[in-house]
Image 1 (cartoon, rainbow, N blue to C red):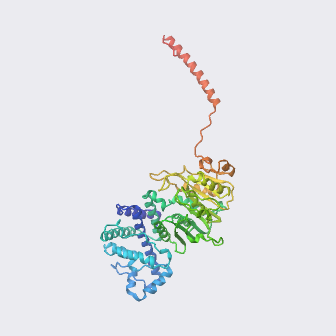
Image 2 (image 1 turned 45 degrees about the vertical axis):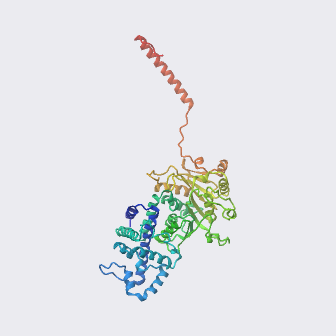
Length: 535
């Protein structure tokens, strides 16, 4: 499917969502809509694998038979279904019985069947509990089909679900949809729901244009960016992964076989489920990614807390868009945490540096980290100044990129990207001021491909450009008290031409003489006319 058709599919699905959600909160309706789209993907994937497994025995439907082919096979082969499902668990790592396939659910919706809600709930439970992979555990846990937000009683809720699913099925039927297309549609809908969620969008969505900057940076060779993109990344971590779009952007840059494994962590349970669905929808096998549900700041992922340095996980690339200036409660125990012991604990008022130090701790010596943070981390004093100063003195801050304001759905403030390395070659810090490079939009400003490419190109070749980028030596940074406020080093203001006072004075003298001569001449005319002279 070409880009135009994908856009049209996205618009069609968003139109359905916008029309059907009524008074329901956009965030609530998002979870239903995306779960149904995910069930369609799982069903398509499962039926394709089943057809391959059964070969010639896979039924061909008679005209008018609205059952799924797998339902027909189950009816004709009752004694063989258990062995078939065991084989499918080994191959696809999950099982969907015919009654729970999207085709069966869509048929119940089309006929306004009163059992749709019950059947759908059983289907979600079955997929979660009867699958081989732990990836599916609790996947639909936040989808409450009995919520009063859908309707006041079962009958109303069932009818609402019938309408929603029937509309989605009809919308998808207009297009030829493969797994890549469904993945793109899912991503498009996440972005559209984010646009309608305001500040809440920051919990689960990083705009694609900003994801492209981070992924473009971390996929380049970390020590010699000018040499181009790495051929392979063993592992990538996003410790505040939201719906996973940033991780998927890195994977897209590297290609489907360019990353060994993707790791993400997410505190919000609903968003955690969205991220797992998003990974699977984009064709990742459950062995190619791991998303952990837990708090990054308290580091409750046991695997990351491994005390043996030889076994402690480290990553080739770390990317993150953590919540800005998040209020946290750093306990005394955290002051002994090995993530922070070489530096300090970020203040209660803003956990920005706590997130940064967490990710940096798990970066490989030859790796690269790119993190989105508010501008305050560049100049705030107190403990943040001490952390920033030590990072600079240790030579770990490689590049600072200032982005335009109003790029996010969740905030209008300008943000920066910090690029950190444990073994960076250059002794200076590259400062890029891209604050003026954007296209103004009605609600959000936008970075065009040319703006994104310029940022990545400037980083890759460490270019300098007046009013855009400078390589700033540590001596200058130290003279500024280790303050990294971007405008101190790269101002976008256009300097006015210097005024030559001698020339200006000479011009004024000459002009004064000219005025005096003209006045005398004029007064002579006035005298001849017997009129009073000019004063």
